[in-house]
Length: 294
Ligand code: SAH
Image 1 (cartoon, protein in one colour):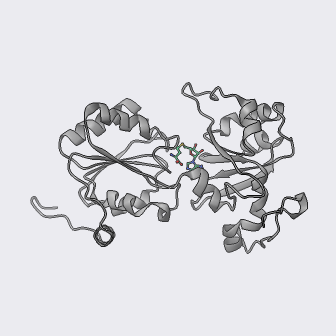
Image 2 (cartoon, rainbow, N blue to C red; image 1 turned 90 degrees about the horizontal axis):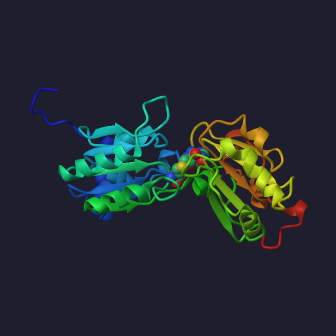
Image 3 (cartoon, rainbow, N blue to C red; image 1 turned 180 degrees about the vertical axis):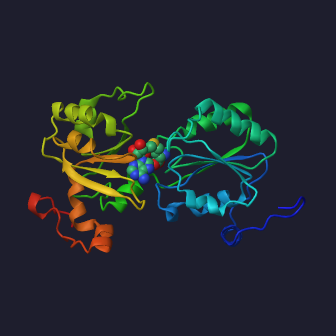
């Protein structure tokens, strides 16, 4: 491009702008940092506020789990910085990311920190926001669809149903030291019929063992959903006893869900019905006598 030429805005960028105007979305002011969720994978699961943030930002620091297609919404001259830890690219230290956010904002840029899923769910978004608060940098949080809810919905597994669970618990398999977090596993096993694990593939063995020791049935249904909502979504339905073996053959990112609600997939796998003509069973809980609320 010749010097001084104004870069052309893409049609995607202009469309996002028009939408933001129509809805009266807040302006992305210079010197601010917006921490936004991009959703679990399918580009359509970003929120309108998230899309607006992408379209307006001068700098975008994005994670590995963010769908690249969303970056097409960015201004043509926006600076796109990969801050992820996957895809064989160099790892970005958390402290570097926080420092970059502060220094870019202080230079007067509109800085977008774009994360997979929701920024406040197992994504260190709160840590980054606290760094901004300490530095006196103004920020906004733009929630996103978290993988543990939206990803499971694409697998046909609802996180709640009145016949299976009134409680759902989200657990990370990755403690601050990299190992399984130290939890009261007996309380977790007893207190919540449905458990959804993030970052837990490597610890599936230990998790299943702890839950079985705490009294959960070996043949309780479980599922592993990898690349949820993306083109390569893969769903394995198994049991608690077989979970660890199954987990060995699955690629990250993946969620593990344990509970009777997994059975509902027989009736709710809308994506399987769409793609493979899979027939849906309207009474998936019938055989286990759990159909009170249907
Ligand atoms: N903030 C994110 C979670 C980040 S932790 C959110 O709200 O979704 C990263 C973990 O999220 C992964 O290890 C995996 O367990 C889960 N995850 C994120 N995207 C996923 C996807 N598309 N499919 C399956 N699991 C996913």
